[in-house]
Image (cartoon, rainbow, N blue to C red; front, side, top):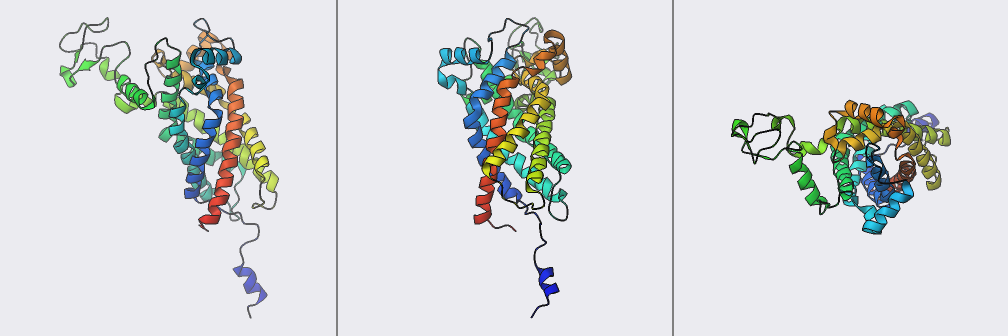
Length: 349
């Protein structure tokens, strides 16, 4: 018969937290992201429209309600879902990368009892935010903002998601305001004269070489996007980790009711909105159809401050607040519940 001391040594360490396999996090995160965006997209649409409605021109919308009314009057209720396809295609991998990277990093940063403190949660969230920004968010957001901005023009040119992506990739390979070139290298010629180039056999303006071609055009505003997503997830996972640790106390495996998870998620979402809305405004401007007005992220911020004032950095805060609180609450609820289900059918301990 084994000695009591031997039995104690063989038993699991009391109070040790269970770890989540990154594979489960990827599956659960992708599912949560896809469901969430289908529910909350109209508020994202309104937020983006208000941010693109610059004060430098006569404002088109008088507020949130007016934006909704004009959109429904012109395009019907489905107009509030213009650009949804680009986010559905992007939200699934975005949430998958975010939660997968967070769990991957946090599994290495937990203490001997498997617990993660809020400071390390912030660092893991920062890493997750940067990863999703580079891999998914920047190209996805560029397409989304151009889709929504395109609807404000009298004759929208994007007929759908794939057509829009093709057009954006093609257009971003050429400088705005210049006719497309023919050929390549030193023999490149314009398709016609312009105020920038007289149309000589060899283009003397040298502007064609200044913009990156192809898919790089979907990475407009990368710096602002990395800053926004990194700070977003750092704040959210910091708050979420802090609240979870507070709720669970000495028992890191204490079950959490979905309602509690949702409340904590909404608080984390609200904190991130007030913490980085200025970066969100800059990112939106850098990815709009008039992005050529700005030399870089810093220049965009300075032009907004100089031409529109400090308040412009908080345009769209209220619709963004509503969307983000619902967004984060829904995502964390679905994520946690899917992970619980996966733990039953996919043992990884």
